[in-house]
Length: 283
Image (tube, rainbow, N blue to C red; front, side, top):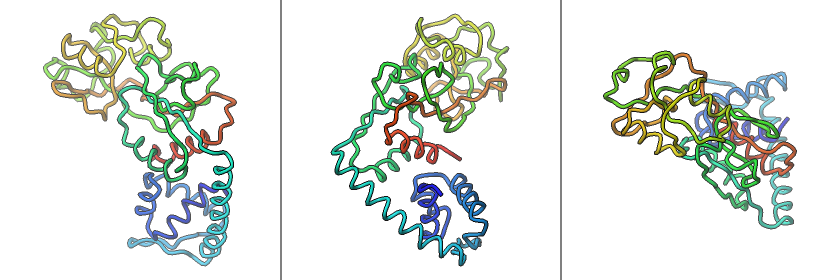
């Protein structure tokens, strides 16, 4: 059993409610429910009696709760002793420019709860660098989006999000319920500078070479659309801004929110960060 799963179990046991436990853990309810079901499958018995009002521990759950509490208390004492011996620690996180994902706020809260002595330094990078400085050693881990060249990197997918065409509100195509890439074939698109990772460039250009203005930041993308009628792509769930609309693209693969770090990096804070990211972005 992983300590993370036992923390999930104890949160549900103490809150007696999956929704309240999920809020306490800074995660959404579906991945918490899946984790508890997997734990029950591994134990071979139900740990909770479930009802519309909440949950209560079964006799097997009562036994596990006593053991889990002791294990988690011991793990916390070990963590504190190691942290004291190591002195202050820091982690540098790269974030792709313009990122406003609410899941990142939940991740920050969860990481602070688990590692209150760790100083987190955030480095925001421009759109042409999807690895957020990993390749140059500027950051320890990146919260970014794929696809990009993953050579030398470890990548954990956190979530997928549908994408759409970013258009002016008065564009003839703006009123459509959805579009296909062929509908935009003769239009100018925004592009990233020469030297940008071609895998990354190709995805945000819909898989084909394009002509149009070069941009490096999210706001430059929006302004290119507003001033020039340029076509761009963005997440369907993002607020496009005044005078702009997002129309879903039916034949575009979704954008992958990922955590990425350098292969072979044994910093335990990275493993903890990735585990927490998977929980807070999931479901």
